Image (tube, rainbow, N blue to C red; front, side, top):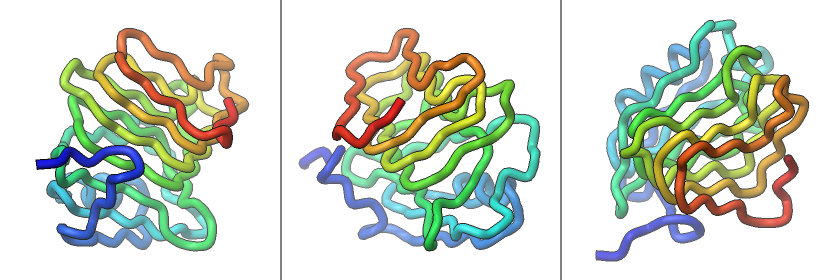
Length: 174
């Protein structure tokens, strides 16, 4: 059995597609909590965005598998604007194409938990938060083609114990 990650990951081909087309960050969180390995959660970009001022990050604790990761992706002409994300012991995710500009007291994205591994952030724009991406624990995360800027603590990427981090493609701007 071949493990899929990085360029080889094509989630959604073996699973369902769960669509989110409005309603705030709680709607995205509900969809994410229903996702199973191989599923795609597709968030349609809207003019008002999904950052509804929720004061805590959207927590993701579900996991995909090595052969069936979960894809959380923005769909539409522009990136969907969402609030802060927090992964806790989550594994095998691809998060693609979002703009994160949430609560300035939290990191745009934070990965927590020793069990966290292989979370791939692709084509993200993260700005005006405390820190861009904080990888506190876990293993084998990838940041690809992303722009991180104008954060309070001036940190685009911070890692505090995470292992095997790959920052790929020259398009990353921190």
